[in-house]
Image (cartoon, rainbow, N blue to C red; front, side):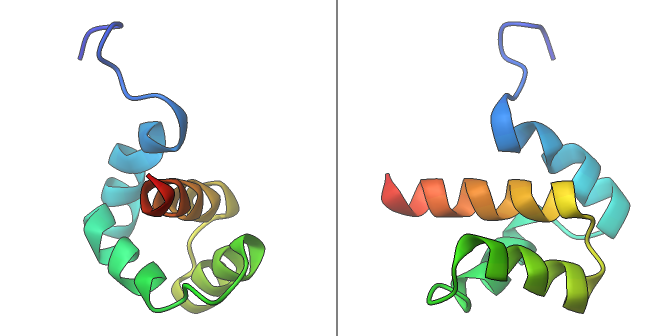
Length: 71
């Protein structure tokens, strides 16, 4: 990837998330779809506690997912 088209913001974590946890980000988004009634940090806590995802990765997934649902 060149500097011009390199992912920014929460999406910049996606390659690391997929490599670390062995699942595509769409897997995590499907899980987050079931938690729509929860607040941001409640969703982050769920991913951390139930799937052992690190805080930064969980936060990036939730932030991106919530932003994409608003768009």
